[in-house]
Every structure is written in C-alpha cells, then in structure tokens.
Length: 157
Image 1 (tube, rainbow, N blue to C red):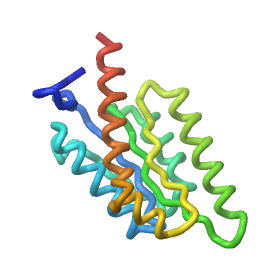
Image 2 (cartoon, helix red, strand yellow):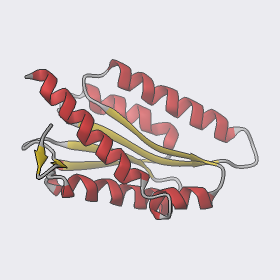
Image 3 (cartoon, one colour):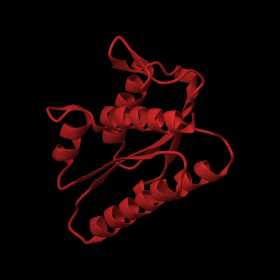
Image 4 (cartoon, rainbow, N blue to C red):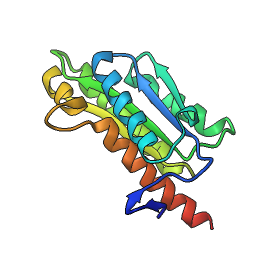
C-alpha cells in the first residue's frame, strides 16, 4: 500500500474522475468538496482530478461507462449523487437502476468504480451524510477509491 507515515497515499501520476449529479446540488456540492479534499490530502494533484457533472443520478452510470471506455486511464471513478425519497415510487426506480448499473460497471471494469450515491428518506438525512454528524460520504468514497486504486496498482506489478 502506498503509505506516508502510516497514511494511505495516491501514487504519482494517477488521475481521478469524479462524476457528480447536479440534482440536489446543495448536497452533492458538499460530497464533491469532501471527495476532492480527501484525494488532495492523500497526495493527488488537484489538476489530476477531473470533475464531470450530470443532470441527475440516473445519468451517472452512462457517463461512467463513457469514461471507462474512452481510453483515458483513471486510477478510479467516483460516482457522487443524492437521491431523496419523495411521495411517488420514482425514488425506488432511480435508486435501484443507478445502483445496479454502477455495480455492473464496477464488476466488468479494470478500473474501480466507487459508489458514493446517497439514497436517503429525507433531505435532512442527505445533509447529515454530506457534512454533518454522519461525516462526509464523498470523503469516504474518495478513501475507498484510493484504497482500491492501490490494490489494482499492486496487482499490476
């Protein structure tokens, strides 16, 4: 594991992709901030983090698929979004489809795809998970990305 004084670090030259939903942006902005801050604190250069915005969470898997197949190499792709339950079954369809699609992309990719999409019952829950008492799930997704990218890096050696 790439470590510096017991601290998980990125490898030199690695690039990172963060795909983030614009829907519920007051939450996703904080997830993005947590993810980018964590990547940089762990050794990534800020200019090596490419951020891509989608209209909503449903569009995230399509863009992730495009990034995985366009030939540009990323150490990991981090998917960030916030799906909040409403009064209709729409939440169930979007949450289920987005989750299944990202899981499928992760299974078939040689690049880790990290799931940082919140699926919450209320906006308050989403806010708590984006920078409240429950921490920042964007930062947690970035840590998972660093760890998985390191595993993939070592397996290539």
